[in-house]
Amino acid sequence: MGYENILIEEKNGIVVLSINRPKALNALNAGVFKDLDHFFTENYSNENVKAVVITGVGDKAFAAGADIKEFMGMSEEQGTNLSRKGMAVFEKIENFSKPVIAAVNGFSLGGGNELAMSCHFIVASEKARFGQPEVNLGLITGYGGTQRLPRYVGQAKAMELLLTGDMINAQEAKSLGLVSHVVEHGNEVEKSVEILNKIITKSPFAIAKMIETVNAFSDNKKNGFEIEANNFGKTISSYDGQEGAKAFLEKRKPKFKGR
Ligand code: DAK
Image 1: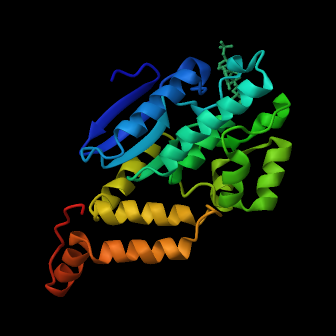
Image 2 (image 1 turned 180 degrees about the vertical axis):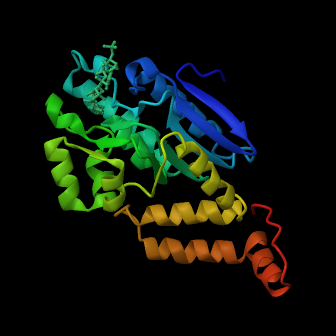
Image 3 (image 1 turned 45 degrees about the horizontal axis):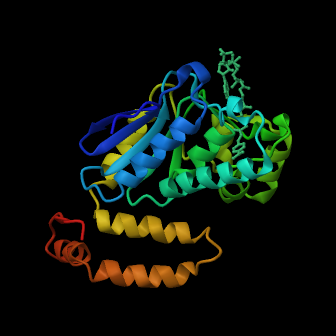
């Protein structure tokens, strides 16, 4: 499918997906959500896609929020429905079977920051700025920000950031645990690809099960320990789990098959 609001570049199975609305600082409109939804649905089981980096076109913004132009005249019911639809797309990213890194190249605000937080972790340019400015617009977050931000930075700091709408820089975001790496501006995609190149040498089956199990940590409807025990059973009895142990004992590199 041809996408109108995102760009896709693939090299050695690593896809760089760029939000392509630079004139609006990559604000997330319905078109971006449609493209993200399609990409992450289509590629869940596509073996040619091994990992994804999400970034923004241009050097100013990852995404400066949900598109404020789409909020005008919205009813309560429409707002709730839109929120649920957007959350479902971000859940698809969070639960994607392959690793997804947000390479934050500038403003990561509101819905844009909620997108970054639904990726598995965040690599940021030293010029990146993070914030949830919804309160400045008389709103609360609508795409999971109240739930994901506390998981990254703890409830009290999340509360402060959400209530003040203040922006923080990349170093502060790193010291709070929101960001995993801060790099020179312009190197955030390269650094993400470097990390992903390491991850994709491992068993894709184990990686998928690891993502599923870690995500259970923040889902209070699930028993993460039980899921870990079950998924450990699945990986130890898999071809790759047996091959990994055999290769270790034979002092050679494992040849994983993803099953
Ligand atoms: N939406 C639409 N357009 C935006 C935008 C946004 N979020 N952010 C920036 N733009 C546009 C500007 O309107 C401007 O367009 P033109 O005037 O050139 O046509 C262009 O991008 C460049 O922006 P600036 O001229 O403002 O650039 P500056 O460098 O001066 O300032 C800035 C950069 C990031 C500080 C500033 O643009 C800014 O404050 N932007 C808004 C940040 C913000 O408040 N973001 C929205 C957060 S609220 C919901 C679900 C989710 C949400 C709400 C409801 N439901 C399901 C109902 C979430 C809401 C949010 O994300």
